Amino acid sequence: MSESRWAQAARALNSQADFWSLRVVDEQIDDHEVRNDVVQPLRTQRERGAMLTAWAGAGAGYAASTDLSVAGLQAALDIATQRALASADVSLIDHRAVSRETASGEYVSPNAERPLPSRGEWLARLAHECAAAHIDDRIVERTASVQITHTEQTYLTSDGAHIVQRWRLVMPEMSVAAHANGDTQVRTLGGNYGTLAQGGLEVLTRYGFDGAGMRLANDALSLLAAPNCPSGPRDLLLMPDQMMLQIHESIGHPLELDRILGDERNFAGSSFVKPEMFGTYRYGSPLLNVTFDPSLREEAASYAFDDDGSTAHKAYLIRDGMLERPLGGALSQQRAKMPGVANSRASSWNRAPIDRMANLNIEPGTSTLDAMIAGIEHGILMRTNTSWSIDDHRNKFQFGCEFGQLIENGKLTQVVKQPNYRGISASFWRSLSAVGNADTREVFGTSMCGKGEPAQVVRVGHASPPCVFRNVDVFGGAQ
Image 1: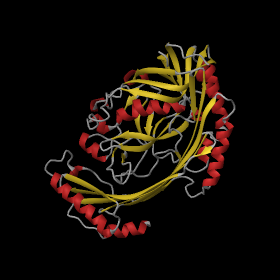
Image 2: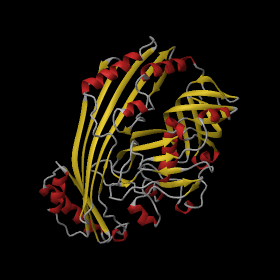
Image 3: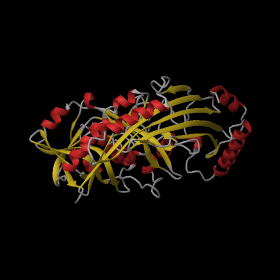
Image 4: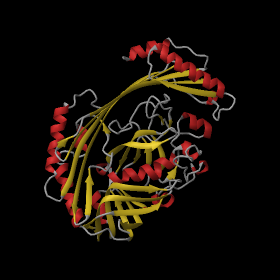
């Protein structure tokens, strides 16, 4: 259905509520995959539905529907209105005090209008990389895939807001496994679900997909021959594809305002961050600058408006190491009496928006990669996440990587396998001693960030340069 039809449908709706909104989501996901030179079944997922939200007095209610006729939308709005009226006397949030925007506008992913290859062309491209990875009999599994997601969302309100946003996301992936003498080593393109971005074919270039088959196979074979990662304190150089996970788990989730207020304790835990820390707490060294930035249009979670209609702008969460602002949307801001950002987001048409990460990035510093390596006497470089564990306060963590390389006296030396490190969020970021410059910064994203009850899985983006951390507890996978 066209945008104008949704506007016409919205004008036909009526409610006793003080305010109501209609959010229509239409999404299609196409998966293409080649495994060990065999084309896998093509998969297409299509869903379309609407969320109706109503505010009446202090209360709020919502209802979702796949019946997108005017009658179906009205029925859902009636349910939402009834729930809002019923909750008015017991609502945790006084919705009369929540500010709401009336802005209208549009967002479109970069290059979203440019055509993509046909299915046959995609499969030929995947088959080429899959075949190129078969360089040795010890290569036992090779998988190449690409996922294409097209999403259109229309948001209309009784206040007159009219927002249309269209996203196209491309996620190329490659995985190569090598096995010998009871040992298996895997190398992937950016980790599991890490190479997600908005745009077109340029996304494959950004992540180095062409040529990845042979490159990853060589890496996997080198890991088979490598010794296990040594244990002990070392300086740690994390590359951008591992920084993505570090940012996500030990900055992003701890700063979600609804989690800080206790909403996630029964499911995904709480946070070591408390409301009184904002403005006074040293989260990291003075080199740490973290932004919520929905304006990097190629990043996975870029948008112009969040799912409650708030206009999205870049904002510092941590500046010069000091904690400034949480990841909280309009409802959480009113509840906590704190500033936040436009990050009320829902995973689909059948979920209500909650506080979520979107694009959460580390701002570039001034160091070149060569200078960072040269400045390390006893250290290790790690790239590409393979495992993660963090406590329910998002504080103590232990992360593992696919690939490690020792740094001795300012030079990269021995490749090591199964590199791991651990730390405590509240002190780890204070050990940050070098941040790469803009030339070293890379943009990654994931489609697999889970949170909420009922569960919601959303896409987030993380851009970061390489970073150096001093005196980190490093250990091998066998220990």
